[in-house]
Length: 376
Image 1: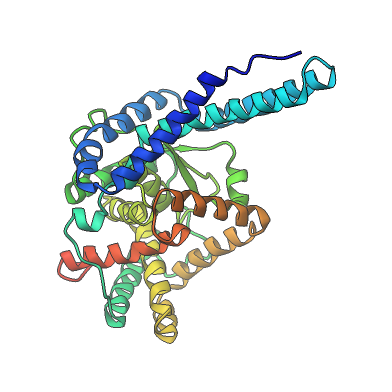
Image 2: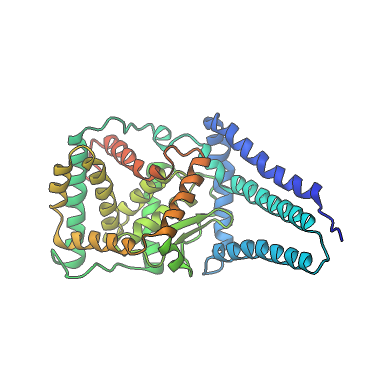
């Protein structure tokens, strides 16, 4: 028995996805136009509208959408195989229908991805939008900024705990309290980076995901889901990193698509918060980035500076590293490979290595402020 393939409609939907990708590649060649029409126009409007609709419910809709999408593919495959096994359908017909269905679904996913958020990858780099320059840093500049971040983190840690070492990893605020603190930091960050006027509705709150254990094994601390406008974070993320991680995902909501830009914007928002714990998290993140960059040129200098951390700060850094190391394995390597492929497809230089390029933005921001990240 032959089943109708509906090939015209399904090929049309697949073609819509291909067309959206072609438009994206064209927009990459016209970043100024993309910034005007999308980056400062319809992009933030879509993101703010979707995130507020999704924000009506307290749980992550992203998880439900993912399960439904995967379930649809598995159900279609199972149904087709059952029909073939029962002699109701030829194998070639079932395979063709499955390929066409998947192609149509992927086409819809790709098209909506670029429409509601993905065209942000075609915007001019943040460094050029802000007219900053973070190129050609020398060892002394890296060392000075790393030392500043170490001293700033030490100060915040001592203020939070009242000691040089509390004897255990530091526990900070969570849930609504932390998000409120970060939202205040974002208000200050918007003054530096500029908030798009088309984000008329603001943005929905970040959400912890139920499937955090799966993110653990993928060594993923959070993800942004464009189709619902949700900033999602791993509930298991160590406390010292949690504010920076949530602020990073909030950056994606606000149109900072490349990972280095989201890292930097997240740092900025957390560092400008009124409360000490987001600032502490931001300073620990920044010093680790700067020390990593410095160690490529002067490992001894980087090691000496790291030794200036308060014992409690070092404890927090070590605890965070040990947390993620326990999940290292095939799953985490596969997750990194998929993330790398995704970033390279969207024209992010260096793929997964782009996370490390936030150092250049930290340097550029410091230069715009007289050479310091925190000091006036």
